[in-house]
Image (cartoon, rainbow, N blue to C red; front, side):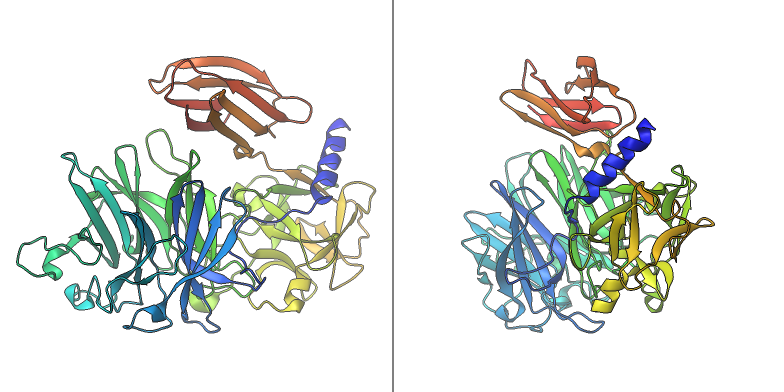
Length: 555
């Protein structure tokens, strides 16, 4: 009885407040208009992250991108629209509707916006301020002419990424990398307006470009596009999109110029977009990865939405496969169980994200069972639906943009692929007190008097005659990342909410040499809140371990 009471309290707390999904983070402009945008590129300037992305305005199944957009955030959760920093039409060559992937780099007091327009060339805009406006730095010329690399494919001059560093002898290098199907690297001059004459033939051309190869790629895996350079310690990471539909993977090297060795797959093909594009930054002691999906209403691979999640490294520097996530950095994952059988949890039927354009959008039935399949399929997010505060929608966390839907009186998990009011209403349910006097019940907005009900292991709609099967217990998923670690002059702080079953958990802190400097059992209080501080004797890198939670922090 005590456990049931706690669960019911969690239900009331969760559904009595307004919860908004963090992902996608780009949803609208300053006038509240819905915005689609893809190809994220983030940069940290002081205490602010600036995010640049290409504006998807297409109403068909092809790209129409007239401009780039800029957003900013000081906490990675709240994003402010900064306007249009640059347009495709600012460059006299190529199409005015091809504002394809780019990246902003700060160098010698100015900001440089490296860009491409489809595969018609690569160039750069320049501005005195991060938010622009940027103007054509080359006055109609290009950094890379398509003819310099053609021979294998005719569309490989896209998606530039830039990296500036000093070598071991103190010589500065300004690298630019790009490609589709083929991966290229070269160097920029100090004015950022030309490739360098690396082969010394007195001219800038294809002879100054080197093709890179990623070693140990698994059979059937090929580099596609969207390279992004990142460095952690002494190791360089190359994040990129591979295969088609596109997955995200990474490779590592001891040098930015390679050779790169394949590290593994990061993300499967998206549930709603045929492309993807990584951007990785460090901000306030954590690493984040931006990517795009087609998760918003009427979204697709041509109307994309930018998302962000924390990127977690293993101790050996490897990175595990992770799923696109609707909760992002501030949402709440929940399990949903019928009161009639609390050990049974709702999950969506497993489906591989489609690689067949004609099969989009995919979907599935919703079942109820114990953990017998992929645990991520059991995770849901309850967000506000259309209407008043009692209206909610139930989204699959790992199939972002897919909602439990009243589909012709059947229940299915479907994507809102048309942005019609009727579709939104079919994905909306009215939150009621549990029909059996426990938990909550969900009444269909489009078919009043019909409630979500578990019947023979499948989620369906009934008139609620089986009250316990039509009433649900909602509990937060045990998510160690609800805990956060930060450091200031007063010490290292571990704070947050711990949702595990144990109230007494081993906590230890290691220094950079692996020596345990603090070890104790910590007991969480009745509210499951944790607030613990340890002040080291010396500065350096420390690892905080609390149960399954592990984070590095600089003190």
